[in-house]
Amino acid sequence: MENFPVEVIGIILSHLGSARDIVIASLTCKKWKDAWHNYLHALSFNTRDWHIYGEVCSGHLEMFITCTLFQTRGLQCLTILMDYDHVFNVTPVIAWVMSTRDTLRQLRYNVRTWPDFNIIDKCGRERLEVLSLARNPILRVDPRYHKFPCLKSLSLSSVSISALDLSLLLSACPKLETFSIVSPDIAMSDLQASIELNSSSLKEFFIESFVVDRFILEAESLENLHLTDCTFEVFELIGKGTLKVLKIDDVSVIHLNIGDSTENLEILDVFHSTILWPEFYNMISKASNLKKLRLWSVVFDNEDEVVDIETISACFPRLTHLSLSYDLKDGVLHYGLQGLSSLMNVVVLELGWTTISDLFSVWVAGLLEGCPNLKKLVIYGYIAEVKPHEELQTFSRFSEFMLQLVRKYSHVKFDFHYE
Image (tube, rainbow, N blue to C red; front, side, top):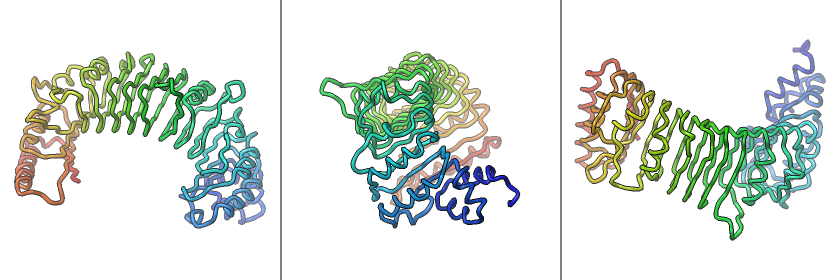
């Protein structure tokens, strides 16, 4: 190790990342200390790395970060993530950001700060490629001043920002590829009922815990769209058919419009969500390249709506992975076997129930028969801790039936997961 160039030692220390580990390692010898001071690229102060952070008062933490940070030159990646109990004074925080602004390419800051300050005023915008901000406000975005020509990834969590400033912020990032926004506090004027965002470079968009009447996203290069725990009256995506992955998790939306963006869709995952099926079907029916489809605990706006497997087979001829939950209402399955035709390319089938009945076994057998090239079947089930006698009998019959299927389809691997 003593023959290693000091630059290589700096790279090794940078891979450690954790400030505690770096300080300890730098005590090895003068050469390692020199690497810390002059060749360190990444530094992280994270309560997950060292539990002592959670036991030290905020003032002492500020001093430790200041002493460690100010002994480095050329830092490119800085992470400061503390638990909710800590509140940092704004003065040292501004000093940290200002001291690294000429070299920093990645900044992750997740600590409550008092008083509020606009962090995008202080960070080095010209070089920054990754910005992750949590529990702090963005007080103002001035398009003449706030420009991020190199920013590729932006993450905002529990951030206060106005709808206008959010739109301006995205417009200020011409190379942005990944945008994540979680539990934001969006200030909207009395005349505003919608949020409109526009990015020609955006490829991945993740949104969680968001409630708004109307959300419009114009992103001509978008490939991955993930909506989680959201409520919209209208969600509209304006794209150019580049979307490959669409995930909808615990979402209530009356009108979902993704236009002609389904032509290249490969993965569609809808979980525990309320959708208007006819409108949704009209959008996804053109996704002839779809390879993975998951419809799990989906509530249709019209309770009489039934999705037959024939429709899935006809619309998605390239489907290889199919996941469906068993939803029985008024004696009718949401995913019926009417007109069942072969799902020739399906090799993985995932099926599950929340309330078991004898019809579930019939449904599983029908789907197995319709997948002649199946290699793996996964069954997910829920079993109550206190089981009524009738449910125990149903589960016993189901288990016996599954044994028969295992023998009949010996070429298929069966997996069972019960909660």
